[in-house]
Figure 1 (tube, helix red, strand yellow):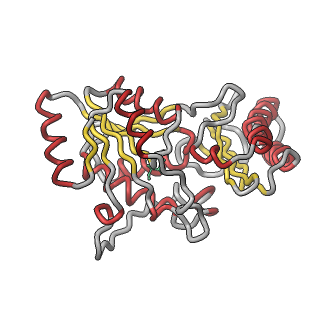
Figure 2 (tube, rainbow, N blue to C red):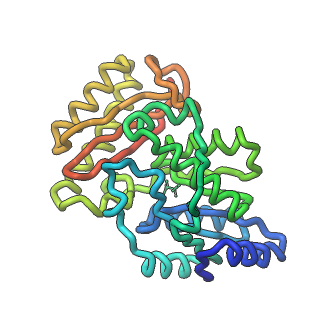
Figure 3 (cartoon, rainbow, N blue to C red):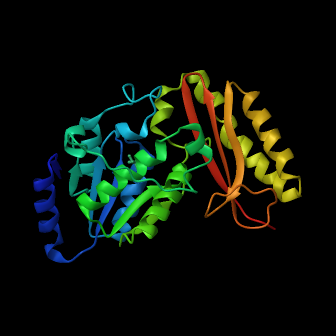
Length: 281
Ligand code: PAF
């Protein structure tokens, strides 16, 4: 695996990869890799002959009071995991390469970015859309793979790729979970042992809300019960629990089409998100 940090080297390495005509897949990450990321790499291998992974902790998607400085950085072990998995190129640009002096462009996807995490973390999805469009232009992959764990991010990227005629197939991979059901996330590393146990309330509350909705319980009532269940199990606050259209993420008051239940809540110093699919009867 080649680890590259400047654009000319990346461009020539990608050109060399493309000599055999096989598709190239990109797996964008911020590092601190876990089994969820490695599942994205395996999915990329199913779709393409060559896999490029990127590691870049993107300052533009962190708010002023968020965990940019504390975000786990483990490039040496990440790099070993990616090489063992058969990744051809690790693209690991510095902040100066990604955002050189004078950088002034912002990619903003309205609508799908506005609610949920977009409301709780102003500017976050502009930062994501800006860096992902740069990664797409740098690597020029045929396919890019993202996890459904960040469901709103996936929806924003799908919208952006369609709106900007990016000729890249966006593949979403179902959330990878620990055996007990907690969604895998780099931020789980911040949890104390007790918080790790309590954190299970998040997927359990979503599962229970989905069961209630299927039984015909009103949306508002099911969401309120989910929120109360999360708060009763060690979380200090709930940013949102919402039922949204699975494609547009518009809020839904009745379960009358394919939907997604999404939640974000804080436990100790950590903010966790999760989501599950809910189908109408
Ligand atoms: O999901 C992530 O790790 C990041 O948001 C991404 C897509 C790599 C953009 O920085």
